[in-house]
Image 1 (spheres, helix red, strand yellow):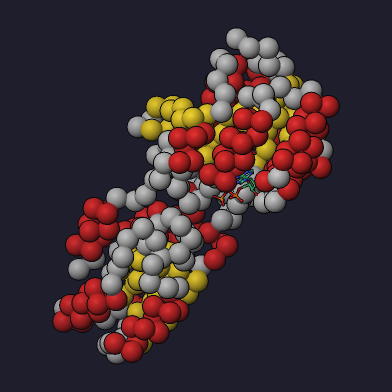
Image 2 (cartoon, rainbow, N blue to C red):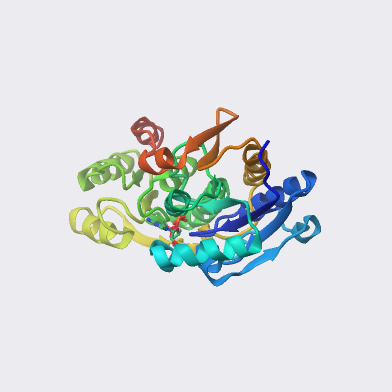
Length: 326
Ligand code: ATP
C-alpha cells in the first residue's frame, strides 16, 4: 500500500453521461478508505487556475442519475504547454494532492501521460466519452446512453419516413469513430451506414435503394457518422439525388442531444465500477494506467498503449447490417 492521502478527480474533454456516477464512485470509495477527496473544476484548465476544492461523500449525493458533469469540463490549450503544466503541478502540490483520477477521452489520457512523465504524480484514467473509441475497454462511459438517445430519435424519424415513403439521412456524432453510427444503424435497421473507418461507395447505397424499391420497401433510413469518408449527410443526400430519384430524401442532424441526458443504467454501473476500482488500484501503487472493463473483468492499460492503439468497429458488423437491412 502506498501513502496516498489526498486524491483529486476531474472530468476533461467532451462531457459524457455517466461522468457524475464515476465522480461519485471515486469520492465515496476514497472516503471509505479514509482518503481526502478533492474535485478539480473544469479539467486541466481548472488545474492551472487552481480550482481545486474538497469534495465529501455527501457532496456527490443525487448526481448518479444526472447527465453532464458536476465538475464541469474544458478543453485546455494551456495544458499543452510546459508552462501550463508547471502551474498545474504547483497548484496540486500546494493543495497536497498525492494522486489524480482523470475522466475523459484519449486527449485527456495523452495529457495525463505527458504530465506524469514530467512530474511524479500517480494518475489513473477512466474512459469517459460517448465515442467508445478508447483502446483497453469494451465500452466507454457515455456510449450506451448516447446510442440509446440516437435510437430513440431515429425511431421517431422513422415514423415520418414510413408514413411519407421518404428516405431519411440521419447524421450522428463521431468525427473519427463510427461506433455510434454503427450501433445506431444496426439498432434502427438502417439500409446503409457511413462510417469514418470504412469506405461506403455511393453506388452501394443506390444498389440498396433500388433493391428495396423492387421489394416495395417504400422508405429507408441511412445513418451517417459526421466524420465519415463520403462527406456530411447533406452532401451525401445531394449526391444521391443526382444519381437516383426513387425517393424524396430528407436530412436530420442529431447533434449535441446525443451527449446529454440521464445516463443509462449500463453507463451508471460501468462508471461506478471504474470509479471504485480507480481508488483501489491507486492504493495498490498503480499509476499511469487507463482502466477499462473487458469481458466483464477489470483491465489496466498503460496510457501509452491506450492512446497509441486504435480501436475501431469490426467490418463484419457493417457487413451484417447490410444483410439484415434487406
Ligand atoms: P473527447 O473524446 O470527448 O473529445 P478528449 O479527452 O479526447 O475527449 P480532448 O479535448 O482531445 O478531449 O483532450 C482533453 C484535454 O486534454 C485537452 O483539452 C488538453 O488540455 C489535454 N491534452 C490533449 N492532448 C494533450 C497533449 N498532447 N499534451 C498535453 N495535454 C493534452
